[in-house]
Image 1: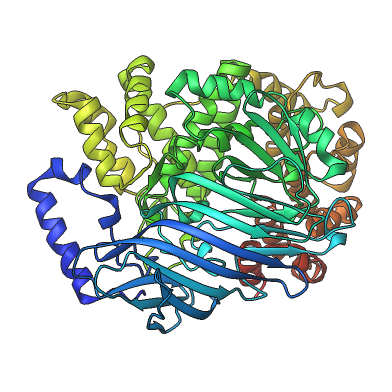
Image 2: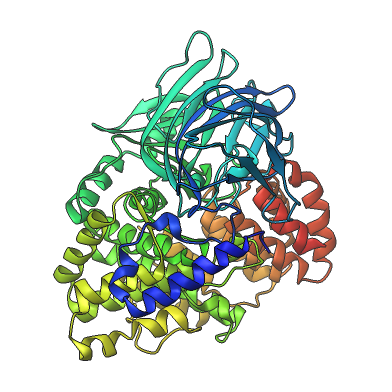
Length: 621
């Protein structure tokens, strides 16, 4: 799929043969030497180390323009350096001394974009790329005022993961390549600019903002948000940004973030990034959250008014260790980010809310995993933890497998070795690999050396290679149960036996208990049954996005037309892909539903980010 040179292939084969004979060496080599099939970069030849970014944000033309000045390192004989680009207009390239540099843009690949190859002179240490983005750059979501909460100012946010950073910055767009950065950003004077770095808390008088990120990060963590945004402090190094009309509600929702930070540091060591703030974006944001360093991007669908959905913030905070501090070297190793983060997230929630609460999260996740494996098939290679995404969009690997199978493996290891020993192992893993990217094989080397040692019986009991390299769910997985769901199951039994919904004992149920209840309602219900449930529990108009999305699946399946207006409103205004894909899929599989889906999508599509549009375009094709 990509344009790797013959020399790179030789390097990979040579390295594979060398590490086969020297397994210890595989955990010690420079992660920048890892070949990434989703990048044109040749890091063994020439690699970036620091970025000085100077850009201007133009809402009128929906473009970003400016310069990316890259400090680089070479192997001494490098004649060129290769960057990733997608839809960028490269206006000029110079060396650090200002002299023009020869460059070429290669053939375009539908997933990877185009390689930008810059010829190097002897001892070249810096290249400066002057460029302009496309108005439809995949990473950039330009919003009109009507698409924001305030309805007065435009808004811009980026989504660089997995390989979209190349559509707004010419970069070596691989998670195995890390760099520090400084940035100067010019925006309209009535807007605030924020990045994945140290951030301002007030608008500047001239619309100019400067940023510093001294820690090396991969390109997918480059982030920018520009809008009518305000800040509210929460704790000693935590706070929230949001549009003015939402800031108080967001500050209330995230009141426990400082407690999450304290719990996280107690578990796995010092938070290395200075501040931890959250920005609540407009509803078109395609994910629940994005763990951009120092500034988590979050969906407004977690603002439920009762702090019931903030485990998502615990997840993004956990990424400050598992993902941002220690990163998957390629997208085939994605589980190293997400499986570890889900485990860490649930340990944070256990510390704050207690083990029964964390058990609910674990059981819901395990149910999601089993459903995903059933849908894909338990022999499908995409149910392995170590993926093979060559020739594919790396977003294909964003499934419950990386998250929940990864979590299930780590819980299985914890139960096998004991929590205290496993915690010590994880803390040492994060510290010893801090600000580096690792492959699955490097993790396995470390796991063998630091946790298993010569204990062959323990290794056999866990059988980690089956978890990682074979499809399906191994039979030795940890068991998951929830005492709090027992009362929900009792209510479901009573409902099945003829009790009226209003008679069920549902007082003080959390969102997770309600979600378990909705998910386990009978698949086939008539309109009268749906109406009775809705009148008792007000699912259609609940305002809780998790509950609405689960309820709407029943509404589609059972043609409960009373919920259709709310379903359409939800699909038009919520851009979170986690909700969109199941709902559009259910519509396409229901009688007459595809036509309804297409009508709604025509209205909704302008409100969705590229990553959501891409998936739904294919679904409705």
